[in-house]
Image (cartoon, rainbow, N blue to C red; front, side):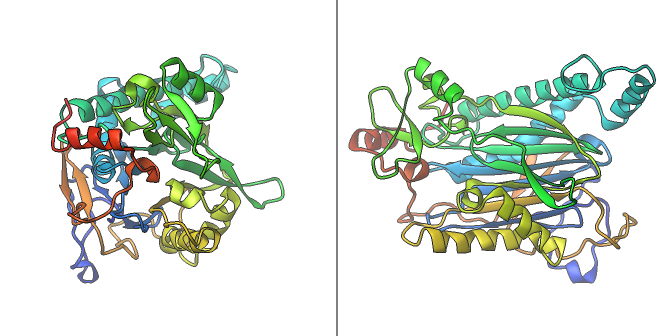
Length: 413
């Protein structure tokens, strides 16, 4: 996979082998780098790479607005679910932006300035502009996530009975950051503390089934939550009368065999006002967070010689950590998006100059004016004889295998 950013720029001779699609409004691509974003993914040792990611610069047509997302598929068709959500979610959210008339950063800035003059409120606990901004965007995220899941259920031509994906996404508008999280991928902010030292702030909660609120909801819906003896640290969700499928997260797109039993596609949506102390945001799948701490991730990204190398360096460090910490385990897929919050020192601002060190491997996806997306994807599908491990490596029992067989080749809906 591959990606990048920048609209309306001239393709230089050095970039002739790159594939570009630019409709003058938006571009989604799924790996690569530019001066504000570095993206990289690497397949693990469990079969096809089920991770996906995307970037949309000038999101919704608003200048200085960026959408980034990372998606971690699971189940036999998890790679297809992840790519579908990668392509459709930003389009749906853009539609909500326009149909719900969500506030842009400029209008919020003007309203906040007026409130400061009037000593008005500017936090999420009152009724000020920031609160209204957050509430409006939260409504947009909730509607977009619901529509994407409904589409997967009824019309995506992907069997999502036992397959699904996480999603962690951010929308940055100037110094406003909206975060929407579904599942156990994670977003971490790197900021500077009072001693001017780099410090991580986790922006999302890993929505695992053993969290009290998540477990309570699942059990009220007759789902079961427990860990297997061979991996007591990993709690999973099981059907009421079957020891399957064993989903290792409490919220996800797809996974319709568990939607009646407490698994939901409702994201946790949060807001953060960015400051001069904030340096970058890292979005990554659990293949990274399972072996590296937030502190280690911040240190690795900040130590990259060039921004364009940051995501790739982090993925390689994660793979190495898997080899050291879990030599008998299969390395998980890893996907990383690093969103830098300040201009790179010495970088020219716009002017049609080429972005540096764009990746030349993988695929990219485009969205046409908020309409249907087109995909140019060279990533191979699961072939005959290739291995998949149902729902995060839990082996399905014989009765669940029968369920999978009965669902094979059938469209959900």
